[in-house]
Amino acid sequence: MDKSTMNPMSQVFKYLAISILFCFVGYGFGKAFIPESVAMMANLLVIILVIALLILCLLSRKGIIPDRFSMNWVYLFTFIDGICIYPILEMYVGELGTPVVLGALVGTAVIFFVLSLIARKEDSDKYLRMGNLLFISLLVLIVLTIIGIFVGYGTFNILVTIFSILIFGGYILYDVSLVKHDIENGNVNDSKDLSLHVLNLYLDFINIFLDILNLIYNFKE
Image 1 (cartoon, one colour):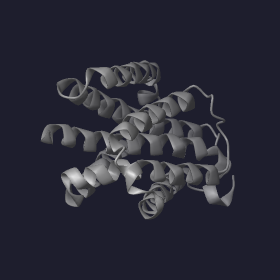
Image 2: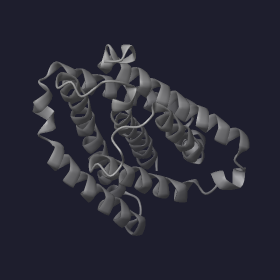
Image 3: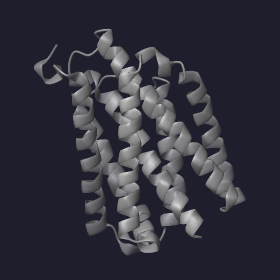
Image 4: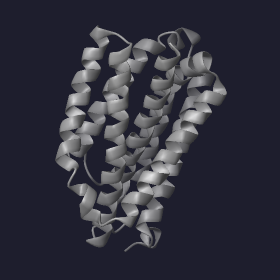
């Protein structure tokens, strides 16, 4: 095992933290260089980005995305993702205020920490059994999100958002358990073996963050 993965689980969370940092660097880049006219399209971009993130989650779960690649590709993706979510976050900052957005970020971090801790303390097989159920739920969520484009906002959107938070909360339990399972079975030899795990956990985190903001926004409306 490579020295950089002597403690693979801690390395996963270190790489995840760096990935989230790259996301916000991308957000800052977008804020500095993306025209305000693009920011005005935030409502449309929310829908496009959410569907894109859900489809990416779907692809990563089905092994369509390679399961071993350089961590630099993860950082590049999260940087670009940060640029993409800039207009959305600006909309939420404008509508809800910076303290609320930061509060949602802290809330997401707390949820992630608690669920990760639970998964780490349990046997790795316990939450891996949820894989098929979570995958089917993710398919349903994509369909509901598309339906939401035509149905509009209100109660339907709130219920779909709550459903999404539950799914990605479940995926945190699943993904951390999968990391633990791979470590226990000697499947982690270097950082490239952790890259897909980091990407999946990043998608869990960012989806819950955007869902919490969407939930607060809808209750405000």
